[in-house]
Image (tube, rainbow, N blue to C red; front, side, top):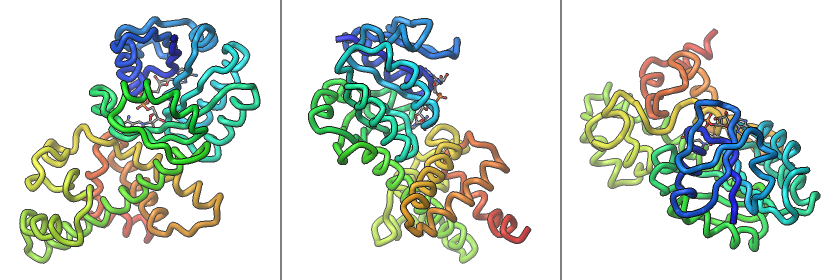
Length: 295
Ligand code: NAD
């Protein structure tokens, strides 16, 4: 079996390297000269990389990249090729991409991930997968090399839907936890006291117990290292905007999701996209959204 891997960036590079390390033949392509994946044969074009592949994996920045890439490579792939798109993209784009592939006689899965660069390197990602159950069964061998869990969520687009719904919960809950710490600070509560109560009571959530936005209570959280590493605020903003767009397309009122996107947008504009998304607590303390709303 030969796997073509398109997009060898922060996520795709280590994922492709893990596939090659497991003994698969991996043909890689990325237009960025600096992109790198150990053990992967680099090709000069996407068409050349996919020509002899049984499976095409993509890990690209956006839905437009995926749709353009699929249009470009479809004439070059073998009949019955399995396409697995691991990028985080709009649900509507994921459905369009699957349609393009299936209309040309191939099979398609959307399989976005959570776990970040650390999970990509360690092979511990979680895949949320949409598409035909038989195609999912065929992809499981590869997904097992790349991640710790793969959940089949339904038809085409369901993987992307699960990813953006999950991340909308995460963005909103991180802001809620940050607001609680900011209020607790003013009320004279120590971070540890609030953590000890909320982490064992009804305020318990991942944003508090794993990615705690204040230093101290959870030593491994990015707050303990100046919010470096972790899940970048810019990517959280991207996912919240994808959720907003899906909510708009489907006439669902996601008021807190929309507000969370506004706060992350203001924060990223002020501080840049690079720090872990829990650094939003600094914007909460500064009343950034209040200032934004009043102009
Ligand atoms: P990245 O910018 O590091 O990598 C994307 C790569 O795609 C780049 O190297 C770019 O040159 C390449 N590319 C663009 N067009 C291409 C084409 N036509 N053919 C081949 N390669 C092409 O981004 P990343 O951090 O690796 O993220 C990739 C995807 O994974 C995004 O959709 C992102 O939202 C998602 N994601 C990222 C993280 C994370 O922590 N970085 C976590 C979960 C999901």
